[in-house]
Length: 52
Image (tube, rainbow, N blue to C red; front, side):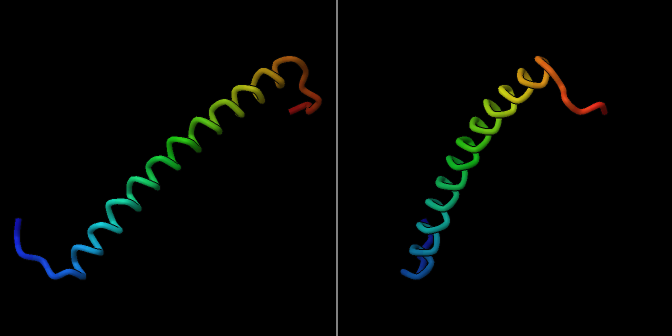
């Protein structure tokens, strides 16, 4: 490993955990939106009140 300043180690630490957190939120959000859109699609198949 190259010699880095302590500030760079802190920034790398924060970058790593922010990437992990954003990836987990993205996965959670895509699963939430997927199930919600699936429920909306099944509701739209039952009866569509809009004529377009």
